Length: 473
Ligand SMILES: NC(=O)c1ccc[n+]([C@@H]2O[C@H](COP(=O)([O-])OP(=O)(O)OC[C@H]3O[C@@H](n4cnc5c(N)ncnc54)[C@H](OP(=O)(O)O)[C@@H]3O)[C@@H](O)[C@H]2O)c1
Image (cartoon, rainbow, N blue to C red; front, side, top):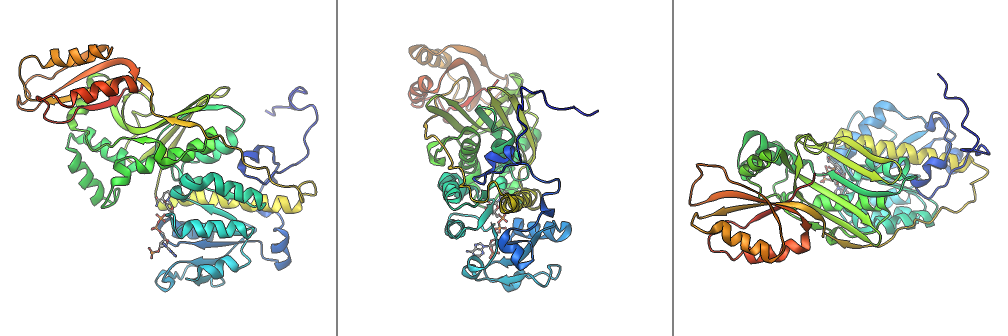
């Protein structure tokens, strides 16, 4: 059944097709033809009669999948001109069309007449210089580079806007899950105030394995490394560096907040023990690495770290290396985005989707009388102060040498800091020389809890540092 015409109070004057070039926040105001890539090429490309020209730099896991998808699906109006990689000879593939130029010379690619550069080498350098130079010369860029966008995303978006070209980075968070395009277009009409996610597949795999097999952390890590889910040095994943870079990008795209990854507190998952899943289960919870950000006036509350979440919640049900992002908006309420957070093909889908979007908008811009000469919108971000001082209930796990008076001394410290104990959990029959037990606290701010934890750290009966996790109900 057709929905019929929109009520007059929604669209008193039906808008003419428009397109703003700044970035995808304006995608909602564009009207694209049904099949984006059947449009005429951009003017420069049209004079060459070849479609929108695309050069790819970085033929690795994702780059190879991008080229495979382009070769197999052949989006109309797109022409792959270059594949660039260091020591390129060993990368050449017989299935790539012969007109594509294989090169190791990045300068020649940037000097070419490519309209769009796909950057897929990763890292800050030379990727940052490549992206900047491409934008400065008026070429649009598609990248999956979270390090670069987390640190320089807002500057690069400004540069793209000032040069009348586009920068898209939909694959830089949550791989194949189209959460960034959703934030920048589908939800830009809302006022988002909260974003939370499971953004690191390595951590989720390890925590799921400790939970499922009741194995120690180190065994789960070695298993993840053997299966290729974790790098030899997995510190960036385990200690939250990877997830907080992604959270900074989500904050930029969804909360219009410019923050550095380093300003976001990250807690490691290394201290999680199989026994924590047993105590979490008693609280009808499990443990996941959660990245969360909440914008409250001038403050962005943000942190990354292992947290208790209800087993029945969306976060509690995310298994293995999947990613999940939840958003909260003032008008649209809560939204969820779930799927493959990494992998060559899923990530390449996000890259190719960005590519098709940029190509289509270059073509619309080139053919639109109305916008041919218009300047792009400048990007507009706030720079809030960043705090990790969330108010939540807390889970405190202790390993102690058993002796009389332990609970009394802990309770004394809590009471001195106005902390209210909610429950005390202790499984029977444990080793008395390293006895685990748990205290849960009623909601309080992190800043109230912290001094108490410092005082507890010096207690002589602790055999390990106290593990402190927020409970996110
Ligand atoms: N893999 C994923 O699941 C995933 C998911 C989301 C986002 N991403 C992002 O996607 C990007 C690419 O990741 P990837 O997994 O495809 O990485 P990768 O497999 O390491 O591929 C990078 C490619 O770039 C080449 N390269 C590196 N430095 C170069 C330089 N200076 N000049 C020329 N070529 C250079 C590498 O050549 P060599 O072969 O010589 O090393 C390699 O072929 C990264 O930003 C990453 O964070 C990846």
